[in-house]
Length: 61
Image 1 (cartoon, rainbow, N blue to C red):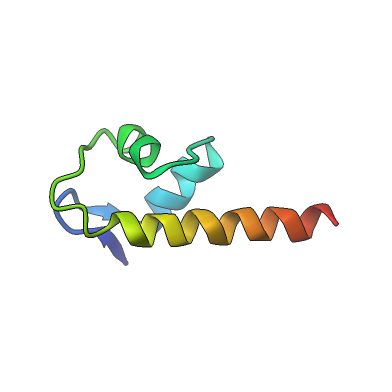
Image 2 (spheres, helix red, strand yellow; image 1 turned 30 degrees about the vertical axis):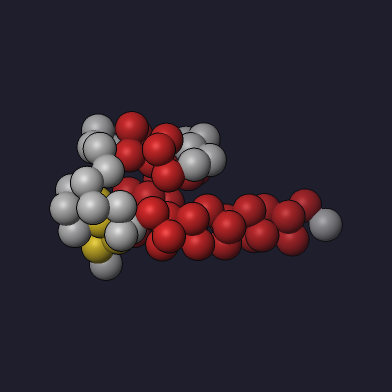
């Protein structure tokens, strides 16, 4: 599924960037060698970041 239509960034690329250490949408764009354009995807990127944080928190317990 595409998260960012402007840059063609897919959900798996967002998750890979997060796994590589990205903790903000700007870092995800940088990891994908892209730049925000319309910024509609930023909210979805934040949701995925939060989801990953929660998964790590529960895994640590």
